Length: 163
Image (cartoon, rainbow, N blue to C red; front, top):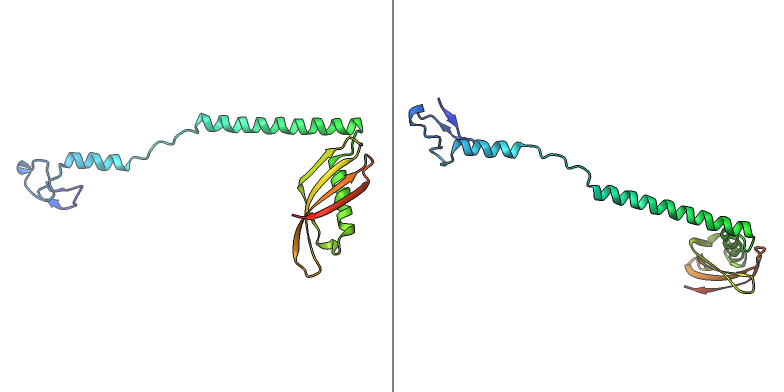
């Protein structure tokens, strides 16, 4: 019976009694070549999700939940004591003052994510806001505004400088 070599693909048509299990053309052992071909066709097993990845996800989600709780807790405390207005009110009051003083108020873009507020000993709140606005020539310029806001949420004073 003729055999086709699994490596070179040539036909070995030698009689069965002369066939020594080796290809006369390339010299490979048929059994070894068939075994290697079968191994290469095997689909690797899917690896399970590493426990380290799962632990990392659980750890991150826990930290996020704790952080959310702390922010809510301290934000509620400030609102209950009435020591200072909500951060949103203070930054909005400062942003409104910036817009009212701008030459082109429609071009003012305030970055609320970088807003900072600090309680000052005299009872006011110092607010620092980053914003950009266009000048008369239409060129956008970055600024930093510093506002002093009263406990009632009214802006006492503010100044701006280029960033």
